[in-house]
Image (cartoon, rainbow over all chains, first blue to last red; front, side, top):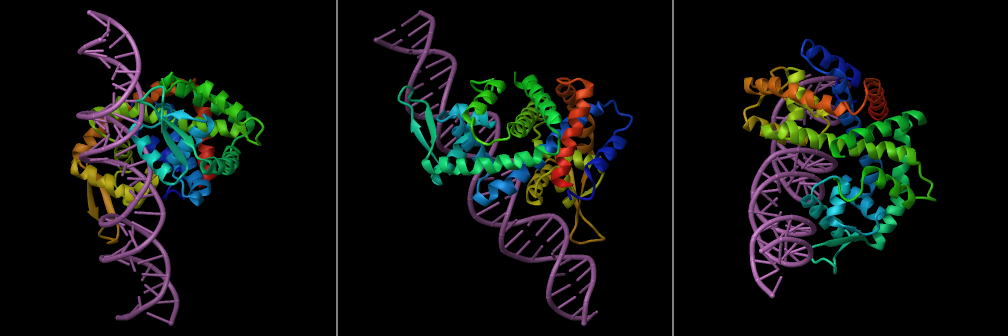
Length: 164
Length: 164
DNA sequence: CCTAGATTGTTCGGATGCTAACAATCTAAA
DNA sequence: TTTAGATTGTTAGCATCCGAACAATCTAGG
């Protein structure tokens, strides 16, 4: 589907192409498959769950973070969602325009902006997240439960090594 | 570092916040840690390897694909790199402007555009990829070798379930 | 031949996504 | 109390990113 070569054909070609070089192929396999799978999962979730509601990936992530943490400071959302505060400004503009989220100046600290979901935004997440999780379940079903645990924990270790 | 909460604190909060709902938490953990780790790895590689050469992530991915496959048709690069052909057009403009890649019309099929690296582009990849792989090695060292194999294979299965 | 349909890369409009610079605000040390 | 420095969100400028529409080109059926 993704072009002329399958995943495994591509990996074999790369190995041959780089043969002789002093390369850690196992480490390369971890990283490249991390990106391949993340891209595939994101595309799948965008098409199956988000697109019908005209939601972008980042818009959904912001909704998710605010939904989970009730009300959030902007700086916190950006860190949690994984992109810069400048990017968040744009996404919040979009969400406000669509009536899904609202901004409010903090009274305690005039620099801070507090974000909350509108009732429309809340209703959307209560409807959308179960569908999202059904797709997550579909995706994770590529692995048995023991393997799911192992993979999640291994990915945590990678994240912690780089952020911890 | 990433905001006020650690990774594991965040996961516990989410579990409590969604308690009572009919949610597959294990599947959620796989997907969310997939994105967290992919984001962390990408940010790390951008800062440590790509930024010093003023290369964006997508520019590097395109260089990588063309380097590995020698000369590539545009449609193939887009599929392999994981983004749309519209995006590729922009990235190729940037790479051409910087003298790292070149476009050429195919003689066999007037619709096709063939992309190759300039000698400057080749030289850059020969210098850059070993550094890139060193960082991949650093990242993968969060796991022992057996775990690296397991994770890579599990991620392959996820990709194949969605693309296969 | 010839022409309807398929394929390819680009363009267009809009939404991310980044760093750097900025104004507003808070904090703490003199 | 004052003021230098730190923090926060926005803006500006640029480079991705996408889907949809488009022109150029190829392919088949007639």
